[in-house]
Length: 131
Image 1 (tube, rainbow, N blue to C red):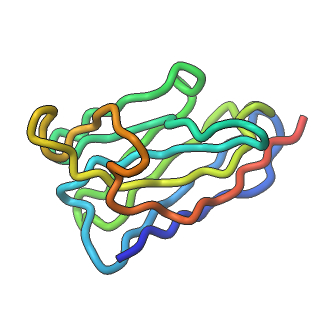
Image 2 (cartoon, helix red, strand yellow; image 1 turned 135 degrees about the horizontal axis):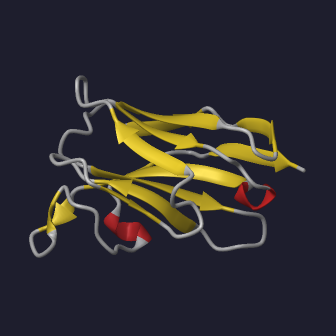
């Protein structure tokens, strides 16, 4: 059971990338999926989340309107993060994580959670934005 993040790279300011998070050993059908990032010297922050089922999405303020999270509902094995209008401050290692949710907030729904609430973490992919 693992998640494999890919698609990172070096882009210029204003450029775009699409990150992928592929599941192996399980399917993502019942999981809320999140993307996090950690910049050098900073704490990890969640930037996007997508529910299972209704696929409602949520974004942090710094990326709202520029990033888009989506999921492949046909095969339930991959989640994507489209990064547009990239800025130097978006430089970070990006991680995906799977969360089953909880009864109070709804199974498969995005929620405020600690690292331990996430069932599976991907290994990270580096995004570097140059000026």
